[in-house]
Length: 228
Image 1 (cartoon, rainbow, N blue to C red):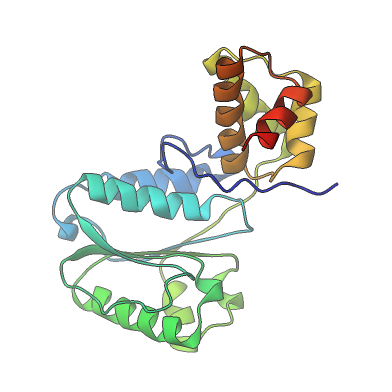
Image 2: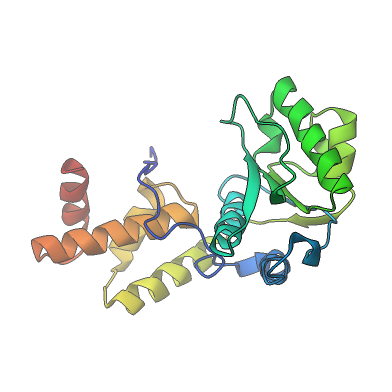
């Protein structure tokens, strides 16, 4: 059965508080401690951190949560992902360097990522990076791959289906929304199964149900999608 990927964006954006850790508690705790080092960038350890795991495991969520947390602290960061085709030069004013989807980097992006890494080490700025593969398996230039692999490394896992069901049930209960087993099955079988997309779908369903004064049922979900 074809899955539907929602491309609307979480209204609240990724944060550490809306990251459902499950088996990835160690990675979350590490990032919470890292973010908690407020003030000067020199309060944070310059040792790099690398998150890796399959799509939907939450690695990009953690990087974006870190970026938002630093912005709230008034800090500027360097950000690069696979969509940044012309990355800028390293800026000494950055409090940290964040690099997402490194497994997809082009030769030019790899060159700039290595440059950022060297400058970050020189200026004692921390690096957070993420990719789908463990450092040793990355098909990147050796000098970049080895640097990604020498610091803190966390392998992230997808939440199991029971864990996803439990999180959805708790989130629905917090909203005062009833999700039948039939609706839950429909959500898990027909939509992107990563938790961020499922929580986004729940938010949309709740809003549409309130707007139309309807209970959340499969026909209601289909009507909502028809009106998108």
